[in-house]
Image 1 (cartoon, helix red, strand yellow):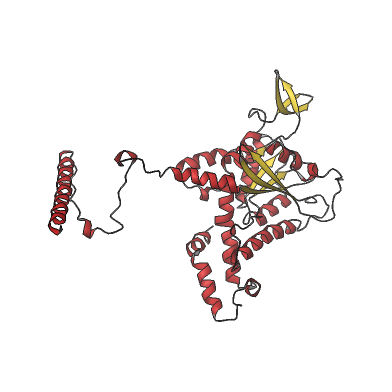
Image 2 (image 1 turned 180 degrees about the horizontal axis):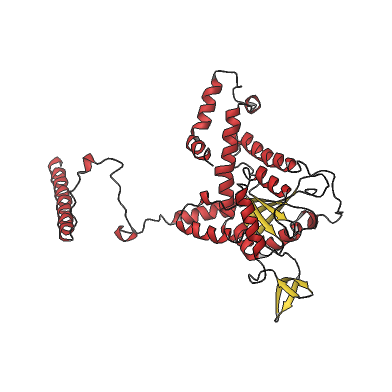
Amino acid sequence: MFYSRALSNRSYLLEVTSLQERELILERKNGVHLEPQPAHCSSPDQDMSYISGADLFGYVGIEAVLDQMRHKTMKAGFEFNIMVVGQSGLGKSTLVNTLFKSRVSRKSCSSLHQERIPKTVRIHAVSHMIEEKGVKMKLTVVDTPGFGDHINNNNCWEPIVSYVNEQYEKYLREELNVMRKRRIPDTRVHCCVYFLPPTGHRLRAIDLEFMKHLGSIVSIVVMWLMLTRLLMIQIRQDLAANGIQVYPQKQYDEDPEESILNNSIRECIPFAVVGTDREHQVNGNKVLGRKTKWGIIEVENAAHCEFSHLRDLLIRSHLQDLKDVTHNILYETYRVRRLNQANVDFSELGLPPSGSPLYSSVCSTLCSGTQDTCEGESQL
């Protein structure tokens, strides 16, 4: 029995050796001179080869991983939180309703709503469960009534900054719990759509101050209601002169194809958009549009306005990227800063307090996974 096994092993080794010799001969005929490496001395960094589907003996089923991920993701659903900021009367609620083609804004959800300008900036969040072709998404629309509606608008952005940081703090505390949830509810703001008033002038001081304070903690998308091309160029110059970067930032581009797409989007900033929830007959077809004395402005017609580009950015092409930037960059920056400040009340979370000997070991363990992130984000 032992002799037969030895013969079989020897024949197998001879077959492998002859196969390697044949491959080496073919490579030398093709002009490629490579020395065969023995299997027992190959390192993990060098022992790497690419095996395509044609080289497999049969069907393995690796591609089924995509179906598994799709099934689990569709079953769990998505979460997307969008904030709209701007003065009253700029069409924030109408634009949100136009984006998702349903009544999802704060005003649309409340039948007894009365338009009153609050004395201070308030935060109102309304959540909806939207389903399309089996895909479920929990949409949260965060409105900021009272922003920029007063004579004295000094520090009117502070309630918005506090709200964004509170959502980061809430997520951080849930993440630091010893017995944390399997899926942490995500209330972090993934995108902030900032509405510029159609004054016909360049950026105001309140616009610059808002984007300076919010640009480092949330992704900002800037839009205007039907502005001229010359004014758009001037606004981009104001943003660059003040060091304000709006989404999508160039440093977040990961590959050439994504860079080309994002460059075309940056050429449209700020987006000239018209929103409406009414349909009109145009050449026998029903289209979303706004009727004026000059004619009907078709919302989804790229020749009339840039609503389609804004919709593609927020929903169809960059929705997941907005969530990734929020989680991997903006939230990680907040998380590392809070852990380094050592102001987190660890006693409420069941962890050792900051004065105990175990505190330093816990903090080093929590920050070890984001050490590379900290070094990369310090340059942003």
